[in-house]
Image: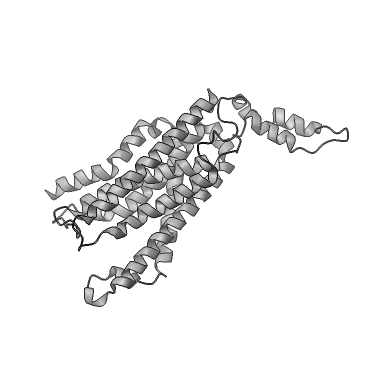
Length: 311
């Protein structure tokens, strides 16, 4: 029975992620490499968070299972600070990953199987979000999943009729898709107004930034570098990709604020569970699923707008 529980909960937690990888990223080696690279950022975020956690108050109380040795207020304070630090660190690392992707975007285009794709940046954002979210899900849930293999299954403290690992698997699955959606939305916001390397608008921006010559025009060296520099990117010039960072679905500050605030809300919902409140275990996944539906709608709208922009 415990073996079946292990298999079922593993499929709930990681089955959708495996399907997404096989259906999309496995067919695109360049994006598969980005998935591996972005998993490193997920590990960095977890490492920084765990290092800071060692310095937070209430850490001993959170680890203690003896109610006579723990303070509920101290434990709640420590748990809240841990969640806040985790969200802040993850979002800072996510922004750092975008910055590195922005610097290396020219090379990513060269390695892409289809550099003229309308959804080049959508695919890059999806790969980064996939790797980030998968590592976070694995690190946070593997131990609980291994414990479910036997010899017994621990019931949930807030819903004794359900195994704790089952509720955790649902939360991990939702969390993975949250990380994927948040990364895609943040990248869409930060890429607004940023030309794609090798596009006509990118070349025009380089001409505009070139120093004038003695005749008042653009220097010959600068103009020739625009027309002949990066010869490997010449086939991409004029490609039907969003040359100015894509269409604007929501303004950059609004999207960035949504990503951060929704991340805080989803993380803090875990504090709503209480053994004294019946069926309180249903609140976190219900709220998380509702916010994920909103995020999915924003992602779908941004993708459709990107396609229509370049048609």
